[in-house]
Amino acid sequence: MGDIFIRAMLFVSIIIIGYAMKQAGIFRKEDFGVVSKIVLYLTLPSAIIINFSNLVLEKSLIMIVGIGFLCTIVSVAIGYLMGQGKSNEEKGFNMINLTGYNIGCFTLPFAQAFLGPAGTVAICLFDAGNAVMATGGTYALATSLDKREGESFRLGAIIKRLMQSPPLVCYIVMVVLALLNQKLPSPVLDLMELMGNANAFLAMLMIGIGFEFRLRKNEVVQGAKIIVMRYVIALVLAILCYQFLPFDLTIRKAVALVVFSPVSAISPIFTQKLGGNVGVSSTINSLCILVSLFLITGMLVLI
Image (cartoon, rainbow, N blue to C red; front, side, top):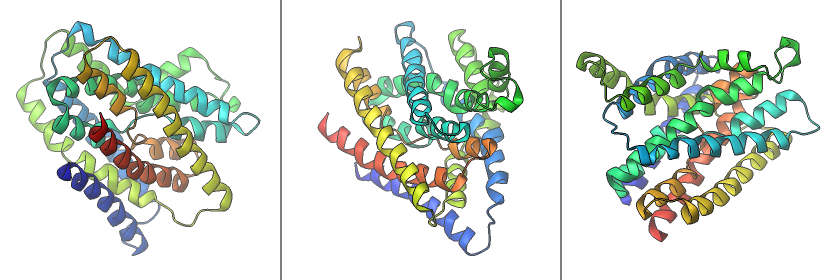
């Protein structure tokens, strides 16, 4: 347990380092966009490829992909409803920052340390379903709210945006390859591993660069509402999954655990692309890491 706590504190330390370097003038606020592009187009897709390269899919567990997708859809819908009567920009902000799970950088190490191979596979499959929305789907829906583009909720426009998300494309390709029992060539995997190893560091550094302490009162209220609602949703989903999923205890425990993951580390990227408040998004992201650390550690002790 101590090793997991130390690992999580290291993530927090990287966020602090990124913020401190911005305050010292080494990074500028605008550098967030540069680092986010490296994460979105290089390190995160590489990490996804490596995580799935040795995955053996059991047909009985494919259902977990759908569960991951449904859990994110629930949060997206609630984020939209939270913005009723408000601007499309705020609806989009809520949708992006309420949903999605940071699994590869944060929760997967918990599974590997405490839940064994079966739990790890379950969490990877959940992440595949989560990725449909977290790595592009939610952003596609949020941008479709902009009536100025004339594409509001058109299926073709949403699919087009989905296919422009490198992480999502990687998930689709790797799941298909796993189902076909095919593997990428070793030199390709070696290159992906080299880049993927930098993903956790760069994702946390990016959050630190975007982090803002100086938030206005309405921004604090907005962030607090999203964080509280996120973990209320997680509690309900965890209870339902633990009690009613038709799997053995290890799998049910893994799914109940994963819904307490922090918000996706690339949510601030999509917030920026949407023209939203990156400072509030990064603050939500950072605080969710601390809350999830406490809750997941507690769950591992209790269940």
